[in-house]
Length: 174
Picture 1 (spheres, rainbow, N blue to C red):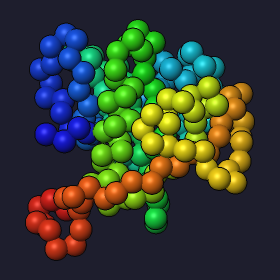
Picture 2 (picture 1 turned 90 degrees about the vertical axis):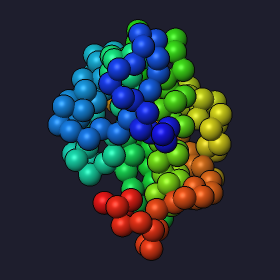
Picture 3 (picture 1 turned 90 degrees about the horizontal axis):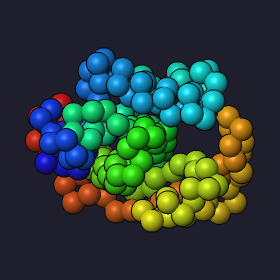
Picture 4 (picture 1 turned 120 degrees about the vertical axis):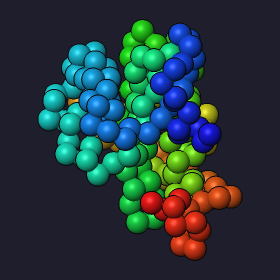
């Protein structure tokens, strides 16, 4: 199974798995995780956290066992994809879930044919994002959002060998 679609609903207590959010129930899990992390912990205003882009984005949901523990959002643009809103609940930060969520998001973008990925990283997390191949965006801006300092980062990658293209099995596109 692809890295972004491994959760089967029957995980062992400490098993880490990621899946696509496919239902309103899954989206509610995403909202719950982001609310716990961004609104409760980081005191981000509701209007900044839930900005209207959630219904035009893909969401990946990370599980520890059967407990929704983290999430990440991906938005698609003409020639790049933006990976954003990585959140892992406090009690699960000693796991490798954040790494699996980012890797799954990168894999999903590559399968969709994207070769350029973009994101805003909190300054304190630049090294984390660098582990995946993200680099500071040359000429990029520093921004302040919800009282945190962010920098622009990008990653150049190759399309996945089985990237979705016109001419493949139509059921893959569905």
